[in-house]
Image 1 (spheres, one colour):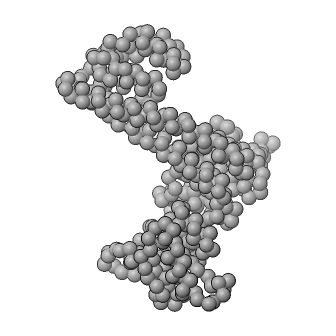
Image 2: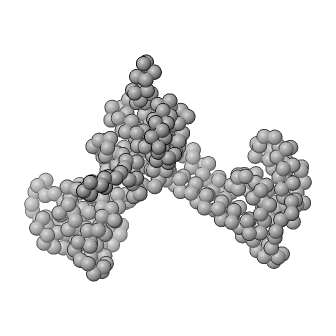
Image 3: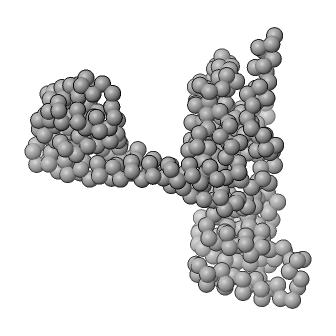
Length: 393
């Protein structure tokens, strides 16, 4: 860490440990520097390359003004102070201190989200992370089956489904799968509450008994062991995702803004919880709907030089938030006539599906911002007044 005054003079420099000891050491250093001055007249700005964690919470609780610095911003600022490419912890501390000293007016203070919002963020992010992990393990399972047991890819549509996992666990090789009877397959499908069990069982058995390319027996045995491990991981992930889904719903339902968020088209308990988690609930964090859209990454960026001016999509954004907002926009197409009409207009102007969906998501973020600012529920005619005018004319 480095402490710098308003003129750029270094006042202190030290390596502080993590945890309570490090926080106490930081307070002691700052206390010695402040001395007998009135603490109400001394403003202490802290720059840190994160906006969450115990240290951030402790700094905010201590009364410091904490500015979250994006690591990309710090990297670009480092290039202004030196072009050698050298990097060290001490150098990074100096960069952050100087950046806060000269550009504090352009940095965003850490939002003061409530404890309920933080709780929603913890469970919502873990839930989404587990879904991503399930997708990764499903892809690994798919690649393994393609290499030694391709018939399984024809027999099973959803590799992470409960019935698929159970049947593959019973018969992880082509030879074992070919011996599965209709009764065995049907029993698994019934436990998974599938429809048209008899027809589906016959299709699965036919696919498993079809001719296919294979591997030598010893290689097949190795693949089978690997697949068994993947199946076990997927089974655990499915169970924990379901468990966490209930936790997300419970924590989100206790938040005061839940009713407003759930009134938005395309948002249910899970997507709504993710929206709250990533936007936060500090009422002063977003000065305008444009600021919220910029943070969301749905609004375009403009590049202008001379007579050339283009609007481009933002590629630097919160992946969790943009994923949620695109899912909301896609779902809103079926639930909101106004959203559907807006999307259709973008497509009529020549926009592709994804750009049109991104523009719809941008519009929905603005609507959400207005509802949260005014503490009002979503109203279709208010959100899409041009649609109502078209209907009356």
